[in-house]
Image 1: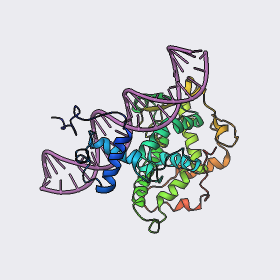
Image 2 (image 1 turned 135 degrees about the horizontal axis):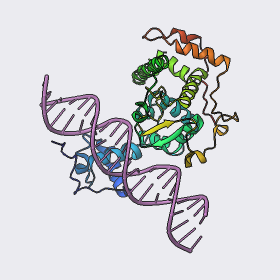
Image 3 (image 1 turned 45 degrees about the vertical axis):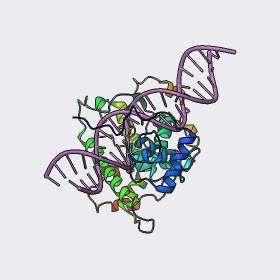
Image 4 (image 1 turned 180 degrees about the horizontal axis):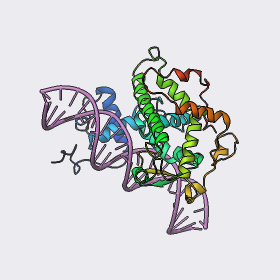
Length: 293
DNA sequence: AAGGCGGTCAACCGCCTCTCA
DNA sequence: GTGAGAGGCGGTTGACCGCCT
C-alpha cells in the first residue's frame, strides 16, 4: 500500500513559477505565515502543490537568501564541510548564511566536484554505487581498514557534534573534539592521509572500504584511480592543481615527505573514545585551506 | 547562421524522519 | 506502541543558455 500523494497532480500547476505566483506566495506568507504547507496553496489561491510552494519559498523567495556567485570563502567552507559531512546539503547550507541546500548542491555538482576530483587525481565514474567497487576486495588490508574505520567513526561523531553545536548560539559554542577533528582534517596532516589513501587506491583496486573522505559518496559517483583510468571529458578540461594550489605542481604521485610520514604515524594511532582527542592539541593551529585559488 | 553539445539551476520526485493523536 | 500526516532532504530531471563547430 503506497502513500497517498501529497496533492492531486492533475489539479496543480507544475513547472516554472511566474512572477504573479511568486507575488501571491510572498504576500500570503508575509502576512499569514505558513501554518501548514499543504493547506497553503488553497488558502493563498495558488494552483500549486504545497511542497512546491515550500521549495519555492525556501530556495528562492525567502528574504534572507543571498543571490549571486559563491565567494572563495564560501567555496572553502563547502569543501571542508563536504569532506566532513558528505552529501548532507542541508547541514552544509546551515553553515552558510543565506545559502540554500539546493544552491550548495548545485554548486557542488556543477563546479566544486569536478575541481575536487581533478585535484585529487581521481576519476569520476557516474552511476555506480560505491559498493560495486568495494566488494571486490580480495586482499584485505586489516590495518588500513581498521584505521579508515576509525576515521569514519570519528567523522560521523564529529558530524553529530557539529550538528549539536550549530544549535547553540555562538556564545554557547564550546571548543569540541569535532573542532579539532575539523582542523586536523583540513590541515596537512589530513591531506597526507588523503593522499596516502589515494596512493593505496592507485596500487590496488581494494580500499574503498568505508571511504574515509566520503567524497562523492551517496551521489552515485565512484572514485577510481590508477593507471587504468581513462581521461574523461571532465579530466581533459581539468585545469589541474596549479589553478587552485597557488602554482604548486600537479602531483598524482602521492609521495609523502618525512613530516607527512610522522603525521601519518600520528594518524594511524588515532585513538577512539570521547575524551581521547587530546593528542590533537599539539597540532598546527592553522587550518590550511588547500583549495584556495 | 544553425545545430549540437555541455553547463547551470529551478523544480520535481520519492523516501525518510519527526510529530502528534 | 502505532499509524497517519506533514515537513525535510537528497537525487534526478528538464528547460534554458552560451559556446563551439
